[in-house]
Length: 424
RNA sequence: GGUGAGGUGGGUGAGUGGCUUAAACCAACGGUUUGCUAAAUCGUCGUACUCUGAAAGGGGUACCGCGGGUUCGAAUCCCGCCCUCACCGCCA
Image (spheres, rainbow, N blue to C red):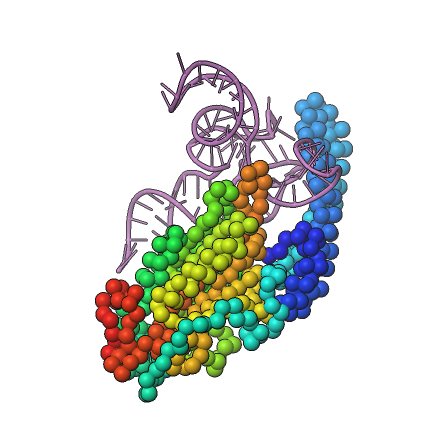
């Protein structure tokens, strides 16, 4: 969420940023400025009246003690008038505040200057292309969903029986491979200095709002209405909210956190598109990395996170490229996002396996996550996060890229975790 | 789920309608002093919004779990909710 003061001082920059995003509701900006001005005006009035009431109340007390009942009575009448006036003003203030809040919630983050304009994923810029060899498959190689049946490593039909479409069931060596990947990713994150959390898999409305899933992604989360909780669409939500309403010391940076969780996404409206096999599912596993940073260091941190994620893919031996998302493809809360795509040889497609973003202070503003500088002044911190990594498409590309006539060969780095070196 | 007790600043904890501008102590920070660790002593020590000022600062308002209400006046009284603790019930 942007701050009204920031919008006021950077109106042109905000409007230009929204254009890069292809965001049409620019009238909201003037509305926000107007509502904020109104809010201040009303507050000055109500504060003055309240000050008068407070002062008079004390006098009334004193007058009663002195036995001056008549004077006290007069003053009481005056206070009653002020209170009526105050009530009207407060109703107005509540109304303005609600409208302002709503307008602010509807405005997305301003893109970083390096974000290219564009509307769809076709306008994303290749930031780092793959320069190594592409995997060569033997004749008769298959996409992962066929291999899954052949080796009995995961089962989508069984998921339909237990739950519904998009809930894969991993079995045997498939389950073991999944667990190996999770442990490998967590160990690498810990080596890189991230503190591991196992957070709740459901969050309350406050948490979902603070990281920006509400109201923007309302329909994409599973909502447990009986207790008014949301199944997390990513570990970003609970892990970033660890620091909701916290004032850090400048010396506390950087704060690096990681966590493995299942992620739940309704994926409403994406039927029929790239949904085969593990390409798009409602429940998947992911290891997330989250950082809280000093504003001056957040872009250096973003680079470091890109290196971390790239390192994981290098170690697994998967070909990948990095995209810089264009304005139209950028998430609501992000200022700059890099997507990692892994090449899936049998499908002959690039599959998104990670999204690494800097939110600058957009989330912090809702989180009320601040830090004190050397002069004890408070500022909003920057937040960042990235998938390191999302499992299903990694699983899919390992299965496809490393298939041989003898079976699926497990990457070296995973063998100490799986305890086997081939699935056959 | 039932019954009871409770929720006050970074922590402990006082405060049952106006003498609270939330005491006191601890922690933290800054100064002074003593040839070390440390002690003594003085001072500072919440958050948000807002007005004023170039700034340093100063003024106002709100906030004692959250939301309402009573009252000229609420941390204090009333109602609803949330949470914590204890015991009971149920249970992986």
